[in-house]
Amino acid sequence: MAVRFCHHFLGGVIYKEESVKQENGRRGGGDFMGNMSADAKAFIRKQRVSFGAVEFGSKMLPLLTAAGMMSYMMEDTDISGYAARVIMISGLAAALLAAFFISPVIDRTRKKSGRSKSWIYTGIILVAVSTLMSVYVPHAAAKIEIVYVGIVFFVWCFGVRLLLCPADALLAGMAQNAAERTNLASVKGFAGGLAVICAGWMAGGLTAPELHGTDGGRKYVMVFTAVILISMLLGSAFLKETYLPPVPDGQRMSLKEYGEDLKAFFKDRYFGLLLLYGGILMFGTSVFSTLSGGHAHWILGEPENAALVKVITYGVPLAAYLAVPFLAGKMTKRQCAVLGTAVYAGACLLMLISIKVLPVYYLALIVAELGNGFLWAMLWAMEPDVFDHVDHLTGRARAVFPLTVISAAIAAGAGFAGVVRQSLTVFAANLGSPAGTAAQMSGRNSFMVFGFILIPLAVCGVLAFVLRFYKLDVEFPEIRRELDRRYAGEENPTGYGTKTI
Image (cartoon, rainbow, N blue to C red):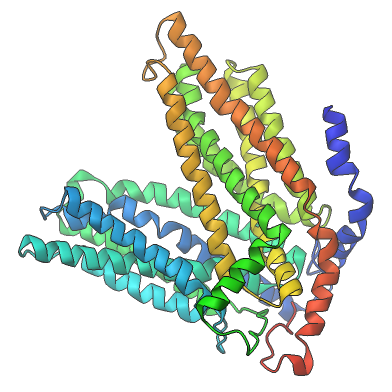
C-alpha cells in the first residue's frame, strides 16, 4: 500500500510535471542565478536579505503583547475583570478592522514605492507610539485609566495588523517566477522560525518579576520593540516589489467590489484547496507540537528533556527551510508538499511502532519537524501562484485580501486544535506525574497514541487527498505567460507587472 501511495503521488505525476521541473531548472530552480549578471545576482540576494529582515520583525512583533506589554499597562492600575475583557475585545476589533476592511485598500494601492511600503511605515509609526505610551500609564481616575489603556491597545493592535498584512503580501509582489517564490518562501520560513526562537529567549526578560514596575523593565520593552521595528524598517526600505499588476479603472473600493473579490476567490478551486491545506496543517502542527513535550513527560518519564524537545521543535524546521531551494529545481511544489506529508506520516508511524523507546522518539520528532518545515514552506510558495490563477481567470489581482482569509483559516485550525487538545486532556487521568496506577498509565498511553500519532496521521491523509487535486504547477507556466502579455505595453501604462528577475 505504501509503495502504491508513493508511486501515485511521487511517480505517477512525474510525466505530466517533467516539463515544469525543466522550466524551473531554466528559470529558477536549483541554479536560478547561474546565467545572470553580477548586478542581477546582487539584486536578488539583497531582496532575499531584506525580505528576511521584514519577516523576522513581523514574526516577533505579535509576541510583544503576550510577553509583557499588557502587564506593564495593567500593573499600576485597578483595571481587571469586565474592563480588562472589554479592552481585549477592543484590540481584537482593531485587528479585524485592519485585516478585513483595510486589506482591500492595500491591494488597490499603487505608489512609486510599491504596494506595501507606505502601509508598513504607517504601521511602524503607530506601533512605536502606542508602545511608548504603554509603558507610561498616567495615574488618574479609574475611568480615565481604562479609556487610556483601551485606546493605546486599540492603536497597537491596529498598527500591528496594518503592518503585518502588507508584509505578508510582499512575497507575491517580489517575484513572478514560480521557483524564486519557492526560494523566498524558504527565506520566510527560516527568518520566521529564527524570530520565534529569539522571541522565546527575550520573553524571559520581559516577564521577569523583578523588572515589573521598574525603569529597567520599561527599557527592556522599548529595546525589544526598537529591535523589531528597525529590522522591519531597514528590510522594507531596501526591498522592491517588482511585480504588481495594475488595478483596472473599473474596480473601485466599495462593498460591491469587496463582494466581487470574495466571490472570485471562493469560486476558485485552488484557493479552496489552499484554505483546506492551511487550516488542516495548522491543526495538525498545533496538536503535535503541544503534545510532543507531554509524550516525553508522561510516557517516557523524562520531564527534564522538555528543553531538548523545544530545541528540536523550533530548530529542525530551520534546516528544512534551508533545504527547500535545493529541491525547487528537482521537484514541483506539489511533489515537495507530498514529500513533506510522507516524511511527517513516516515519523508518526515510527513513533507508533516504538512509542516508549527514547532514541526512537527523538529520531521520529526530528523527522516529523523536517516534514513540517517542507509543508509550511510549500504553503507560502503556493499562495502567490494561486493568486495569479484567480487574476488570470477574473482580472482581480489581489494578494493582501486573500492572505487575510487564509490567515483566518489557519487561525481556525489552531482554535480547533486547542479544543481537541483540551478534550484529550480531560480524558487523561493524573497527567501531572509520570507515576500512577496501571489504569492511569493505560489512559495516558491511549491519550498520547491518539493525540500525538493518530491525529497527525489522519492530517497527513487529508493533506495527501487535498494535494491530489492541486495541478497548478503544470498550469502555471502558461498562466504566467498570459499574464505577462496582459500587463505588457500599452495595456499596462503604470509599468507594474512588466519587470522580471
